[in-house]
Amino acid sequence: GVALSGDSGGSMWASLGQGCNCALESAVALAESVGDVATTAGGAGTARKIKEGLLAYERAHHPNVEAAVELSEGGMGSSKRRTMSRSFMALIVTTLFLSKAFGFLGARPPAIMQISEAGVSFASIRSLWRVQQGVATAILACTATALVLAAVAAVRTLAAAVFGVRL
View (cartoon, rainbow, N blue to C red):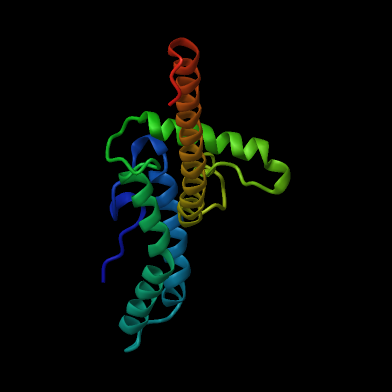
């Protein structure tokens, strides 16, 4: 079998600076999965043990690699572009605000701020980002709705005041 490690199994967004980290993480996971084979002195079962070790490596490490690739290729804004859109920036700002405003409730730091944290897997960052993105999107949608309703009320008031027309 063949084992890919680091960012050889999928592309990494260079600006995340995580290619080397993924390689080190992969090396540790691979060593943990097939390490006992190296201490075995050959024999008929060695090939089977290597295959089992590689399968264990894939099962244990695949979710994290898949998350790293998804975060890299899609960007945390789920855009194939490598630039930040206004909507993505609004999500980041809203998420930052929520984490600061509700930190006393145990709100976690924004997922994007945890990319370089030791001991935080890409899979957990992706999961947290999905939750935070959903909450921020809902808040932004409610804010936009409130602004539209306020604009409609202002137009009605203006029309009544200037033209004597009730809308």
